[in-house]
Length: 264
Image (cartoon, rainbow, N blue to C red; front, side, top):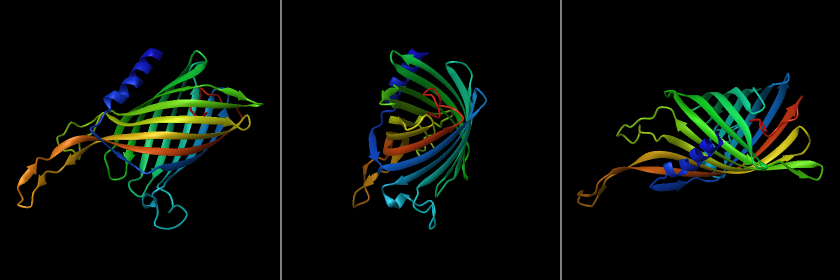
């Protein structure tokens, strides 16, 4: 399984090459996560994430009030269950509020933890159904892998890790209209984390992420001053690259967290 996951994840960047790229302003994502252990094997977690854009024009969640300075607010409620030493599974519900549209996400995930020499190696597959305001629902899969190592620092630990995730559309259109056609790989994320264990139950995780969205665009035809066609219009692939700087604050009640968990 390790070799298959590595080969798939290494191949995805080559499958998502595009003819052109556009770059979005840097975004800032602060997040608070609270987890609570249920029995020996269960874990209930709640997340509250805020997204701000360094370009204030995108921070339009509300016209005025407390949330007017944000681009997006996301709430997550989830449950994770330890199935065995190496396997975990669970479910999540997420609600995201933006200027338009709002969206609900219903997810099931399966997670495997292993090792490559001194590094931990976590793999995860997540099936997700997305219900967006005034739009048809959409199913997709999210494949993720993470390599890291928990290192002692004085009387505490730090955990640097590298994570890669690909979002694949479960059913995508091959329509000729660029406005409706979609690419198989919808989005990829490459993320560098540094988790600092402040106490046994409190962790701070600053991270940097490069997010790429993949889609088609219709380039219109070009006409000269005499309205004669100079260049035909065409459809092309495009990548939108978005840098993200984030900070996660995580606290776990009634249990010490481990790197194998989705909540670590």
